[in-house]
Structures are given as C-alpha cells and as structure tokens.
Length: 270
Figure 1: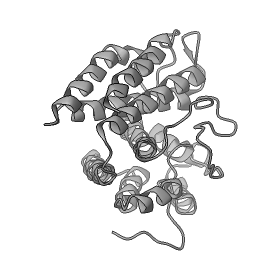
Figure 2: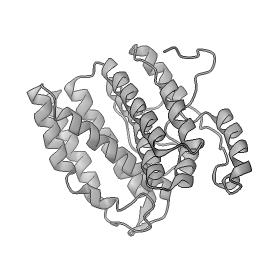
Figure 3: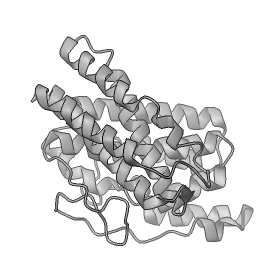
Figure 4: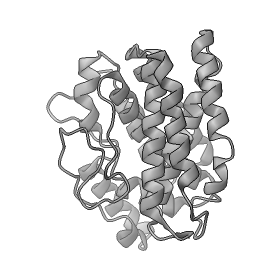
C-alpha cells in the first residue's frame, strides 16, 4: 500500500466528506446540519495532547518515540470503536456526526511517524470503513470494513517493534487521556459535552482491548504486566453506561487512579 506523497489523506477526508454529505443530504436532509464539515485543526509539534478550544486533553503529556506512535494509533482506534459501536447499535446519524466532528484522528498527523518507523499505511482501510458509514451500508459491511481496519492497525503497531515498556506506557497515556476527556465531558454526573465523554470511552476501550491482547502474549513478563493492567481496569465499564448516556458517575478519581497504576506497572519493564 502506498501513501499519496502529494496530499496525505485524513481518516475523515474533509473535501471528500463534504461531497459525500452533499449527496446524502438529498436523501437525508437532516444531515445537512448534523454532518456539516468543520475545519481540521493545525498540526502541533509539542508533546501536549491538548488542542485549541478542547478542554478534555489539556495538560496530558504524551510519551515520545514508539510509545507516541502507539498512542496516536490509539486516537484512530478509539474513533473507529466509537463510530462502529454507535452505528451497529442503530444510532447511525450519531455515528456519522461523531465521525465528522472527531478532533483526534487526522491521518496527516501520523504520516511522519509511519515513515520514521517504516510502518505500513492504513488509509485505504480507513476510507473503506468511512465510506461504509457515510453510505449507510449494511451492518455486515461495516463489520467487515472495521475488522479489516483493525487488522491493518495491528500490522502498523507491530511494525513499530515497541518494547514491553513502550506498549505498557502507551496504555498509561491512553488512560490518562480517557480520564482527562471524562473530566471535560462530565460535570457532577451529567454528560455536558457528549463528544468528549464518548472520546473518553474510546481511549479506555482501546487501552483495555490492547491489554487483553498483550495478556495472551508468549512473553511471560508482558503477559503478567498486561493482566495486572486488566485488574486495574476492572469495573471501569460502569463509567460508560452508554455512548448516548446523559448521566453517569460524577467522580472520575477511579479513572485517574487507574492511569496512575498503569504507569507504575509499566516502570519495572523499562
């Protein structure tokens, strides 16, 4: 698979999405408001995860190197998990809205790191999945394109040749993001900013899924550490009663504590 060196594509191609929306609006007029394309944020070279005007990630510092690549790939995986979960649960318009409004997963942001680590691209699979969502495809088609995309992401992650510590540290970074996004989206148990609440679940879900994979590793040290991670994540599903929930747990301290424990688990593997 080759990247287009002239214009790296985003996971949510803005110009392409706008054209798709124009077509969809003919059949679904309500989408002209729900699915209006927004401008992509400017790239940033800092280690801060925060973006202008977005409270959730502010103050979260990402680890550099291979860990950062894994965490950036987690931006994409988290977005795909949210969108597919919404779509397959019958909330198709909300899935499309989240796909368009997501402010984390922009393909051009990860292209330099793919080149640095000679990691395979996954833009073709991302566009196939996006197309299926936008074109109101059947559930079976969405599942097939999603699974192909997950397989491509796994290959990209594997190409980083990240160490046990780097993989575990990325889980810590993802959970730190999950906790920060939760704080940005939930106030006193009320979901005030739904997209940040959903993003929190996306990061948490990605961290948990990756830990489950690592727990099956033949590397005993990695498997033990991953199982320790899963113990610390146990029970956190209660913070996410549903991606369209209006109320949830108001105290996020358990999410922050879990993130802290994940860093403690990672450190002996450094």
